[in-house]
Each structure stands twice: as C-alpha cells, then as structure tokens.
Length: 366
Image 1 (cartoon, helix red, strand yellow):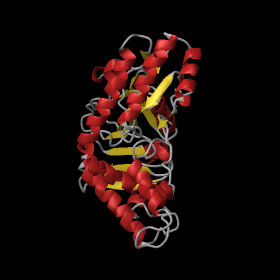
Image 2: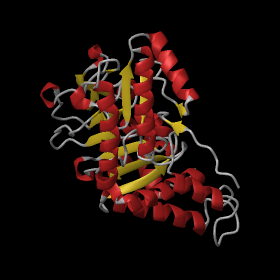
Image 3: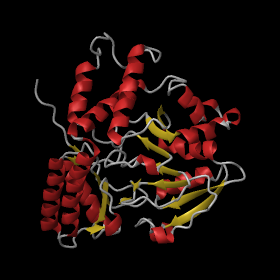
Image 4: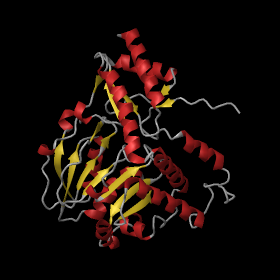
C-alpha cells in the first residue's frame, strides 16, 4: 500500500494529531482488539468504554500529577459551553466573578458570565487589540470574588501567560483550550481547568474539565436550580456517564495521553514546543519583512501570529504556502494576518519547512 501523502496542517483547530495515534485508530477502527466491534459502536454502558475512560483519566492524572482532591470530567459542548457552566455552577446572584480580559475568547466568556451574575473586569488589554497579557500590577481583584477566570493561551491573538497571576485564596479558573498539556501544569494553583480537546488532546467533541472537590460541592448546592446536564455535581456523580458520552473522542484523547507519556511527559513536550516556537519567531524577527503581532514577552508557543507589509501580500503568502503543502496559515477572520498553530503533535520538520518557505518568499517579494 502506498504511503498516504500528508501536508503540514497549521490550522488552529481541529488540529494535527500524532501520526502513531492516527495509525492506531486506523488499525483498530473496525474492531477493537478483544472486543470485536468498533469504538464507534460500543455501548456507553459497556465495561469496555468504562475501561477506556478510566485509563484515559489515569493517564491524565499521571501526566499532570492531579491529586485525588480533583475530579476529571469528560464533557461535551466545547469550551464555549464552559463559558456558561462555570458561572452557573459557581456564581451566586449576590456575588461577583473576576475576569481577566486578554483576548476575544475571554471576551466571549465575560459575555456569557454576565447573563448569570455580576462580572468585574480585573484587567483588560482590549484597547491594545489584545496584543499582550496584562501585568500583575495592572490586575485589580475583588476580595470576595467567587472565582478569577483567565484564558491561558489566546489562540486568535497569539499571546500566552508565562506566569499565572497571583489571585490569593480566590479560586482560579482557567480556559486552557489551546495550550492544555503543552507544558507542565501546576494544578495546585487552579480550582478548575477546562479545555476543548481539538487543539492538543484529540478530535472535536470532548471537553476536559478538571475541577477541585470544593467546587463540585458548590455546584451540588445549586443542583436543584440547574439544568441536569449543566451541573458539575451531577456529571461528577455519574463519572461523565449521565448521558451517552462522545466515546470516539474520549478514546482518541486517551491514545494521545499515552503518546504524551511516551514522549517523556509534559516537561519533555514543553522543550520541543519551545524549540519549534523559537525557530519560527527567529525567522519572523530576522529582517523586518515579517512583523510579529504579539508582545515579545507574551508570545504564544502554540499560535504564532504575524503580518506582512500588505493584505495582498498576505493573501499571496497563504496561497503560495498552500500550494507548497502548508495549510491553515490564514489568520483568524477577526484579526487577519498569518497564524501558524504548532501544537504538541505538529512536527519539527513542518516548522523547518515553513521557515524555509518564509525565507524564499521574502527573497521573491522583499
């Protein structure tokens, strides 16, 4: 059988998956070993699926050193549903939630939270087109906040927290959708972490939520007033099996977790990600033909954003790159420009290919 030709996928999501994971899925898709049917067909009440989910959870706990005082949930609806679930479960009518507004997805989360209760903007770089992460000195937190919400990596704008903000004893909630498990995660600094899987962990369809027990208890106190499928307490009680879960997406997520562990875990994958990003930013900064859009100190390791001299030149860049086997480089429609998403599974040789293309494109158009 001839080898399938694959291009380099720089898309922001759904994103590239590890080749060994894709090959294992392909090999076992018709019938899982010792099961005799596809993962797409098995009952959500079967021991097989429960074992797959338990193994995925165990590997997540091992990968990020998650203690027993946190629940690991496999939910649906993407991070966008979490924009609503977080305040519905944690925010009372007479309390306030603090949000750091450092990107368009943070802005969306704020909009949803305001439908539930009071929101205080602890800091914002909206006036600067979200080109940077607010400094700690700019953040003003409410002493009695129900929680502080951040977005750890801004997929659209290409910025990323390098240090978590100091929020004191207030629960820290983090949307980590686009950098989850790309580097070590200090779970002890967080009360709740959530992430759509389709960037670094698997296909679209499953959302990972890691939530501390005290927040589950807080959710339980609101259970009577919440829609059943919006209650962390109910979903934790039923071990993510209240309804039919996204079995295939969880299965793939589990395979990706095993792949990450085999790479050496989060410290090892962080070194690879640092290397990939450094090579790409070095080319962006080399002559001035390309211009990075994010503040240097806050540049994302996952989503590298830059501009060229004109929009016409950017369109030519995207078209020529696609013809050369590099897809997904067009920037988000809200900001334009170029965006190269280089998540965990994106190969280093793909970054090298893009750097070589950038040099040649500059030679022809510079």
